[in-house]
Every structure is written in structure tokens, then in C-alpha cells.
Image (tube, rainbow, N blue to C red; front, side):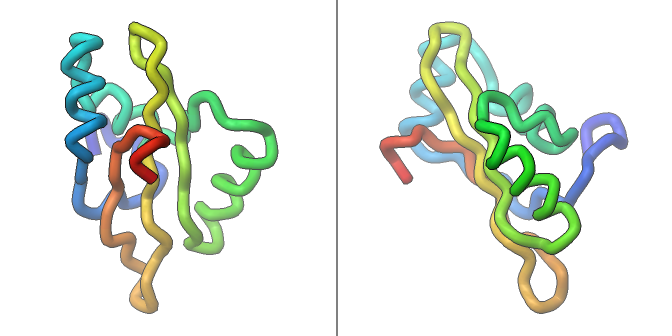
Length: 99
């Protein structure tokens, strides 16, 4: 996806209304954050969450990234765990208060 550097399948791309409003206020698009997530740039997560994401690339569990918009608002991207067929159904961009 994007430039061939995606580390995992994103599944369907979804965004909550709050995340879209936050991005609009910042003058940014979801794609810049989705691209970072897909490349394995987990953003502003703690060391334990970074390691959990690296483990998830192997074991298929959920992936979580956290980023700040240009105006300092936090956004998360969550990619669902793999199903029994090894597919990740969706990646969602949302504000933490929408979780």
C-alpha cells in the first residue's frame, strides 16, 4: 500500500466522525497517518506498546498507533487482530475519547 512499504494488511479503512473533524480542523488528511501506521511508525506510544505492535506483526494480534495532529490533538489508529484466515478486517482512525 502507498509505496510498497506496508508491513501488514490494513483491511478496510474506517474513520470516526470525531477523527475526521479533528483532521479537518488541523488541515490534515487521514492518509498521512495511515501511511505511517502501515510502515510500522507507531507514533507516540510507550515502549511496551511498540513491542506489542512488533509482536503483533508476527502473532496477528491488534495493532495500535498514536499520533498528534499539527494542532496537538491526539489520534489513534487501531488495526484489528487477524481472523482465523489470517485477515485483518479493518483499520480505524479515531480520537481516544471515541474508543
